[in-house]
Image 1 (tube, helix red, strand yellow):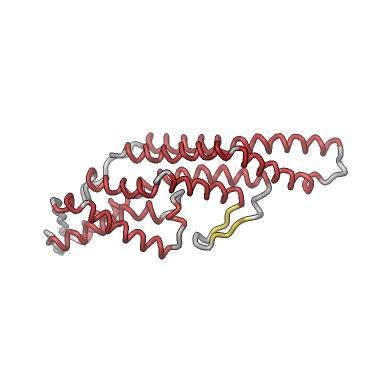
Image 2: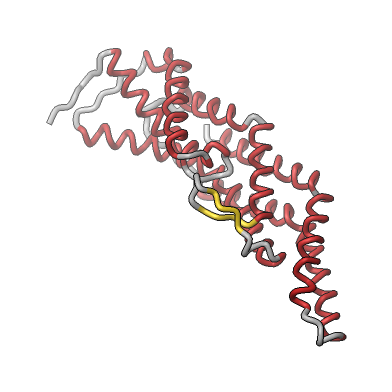
Length: 260
């Protein structure tokens, strides 16, 4: 069944709007280190629509010379899927930061004793331990300080020009993705290393105390001590956390730049 072979100008912009929205949706909506993804679903939907329109206006001249031709509904929805896949590639870079930091901090929270004391986030319908939430919020603030939200919009705008809408999906090397993931996990280990070392020494001292004074309940003595040491180590390593966080977000930017 014939759909539309050549769109008039108005239809062309409507199609371009939906293609841009599919490319932008994973980066803004799906869970990642991007603070916008932590907003309620309705707000994320409004922001996606607004940003898609802004990008459409910014790339209007490039879209004017494009001729979107679809003979069937299947071709149109396939083109939307391709744009969504391109957006998933950009989102993957943000996800690596979140996954690496979240994995290391969850293990650290379990060791410190914060794991049972979760902070419920109603917008995401999940619960995070205190230490995990503090550092995730710190990295989210860094995202804004480093103009990450502007870079997302600039990225999608540039890709509309350099990877035109409905032009297909380029080949992404698997080695590039694995290199990004491994480097982010290494940085995440370095991120929590000072606290890990401090807790290791506390566990060693508590183990010796348990051997010398078995009548003392080491768990109830050690739990507040480990929490206090973790907070002290966190306060002293705040500058270290900021520098590592900047490195992780810069690797995301370098990965995006390597795609086009």
